[in-house]
Amino acid sequence: MAKAKVRTDEKLYYSISEVARITDLEAYVLRFWEKEFPMLRPKKNKGGNRHYQKRDIELINQIKQLLYEENYTIAGARKILRRLGSSPEKKKLVLKARSQTVLGEIRKELKDILKLFPCLF
Image 1 (cartoon, helix red, strand yellow):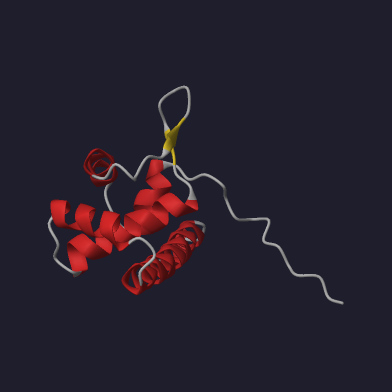
Image 2: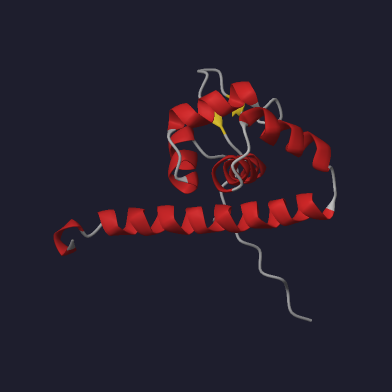
C-alpha cells in the first residue's frame, strides 16, 4: 500500500509582508481589516509582529472577494461572513478563497525565484 505524500515545506506562519504579497494587498489594508473584521485575528509574538496562518489568509481572500469583486461595503461583508455559516454560498466563497491563496503563494514564489536572476529581466 502506497504512503500518502505529506508536504513538509508548507509554512505554519506567515509574516504580514508575506501575506501582503500572497494576497496582493498592502500591509496597512490588512491591519485595517483586523479592526473591521473581528474574525480576523492573527497571532502576535512578544514583539507584536503578526503571524498569519493559512486560514487567516483564506479569510483575507474571502473578505477581498466580497469587497473588491462583489462590491459589498465593509459592514455588508462582515454581515455576510457572520451569516453564511456552512451554507453552499459560504462553501463557494471558501473554495474561491483557497484557490486565491494557492495562486498568491505561487505568485510570491515565482517573484522570489525571479529575484535570483536579476540579469535576465
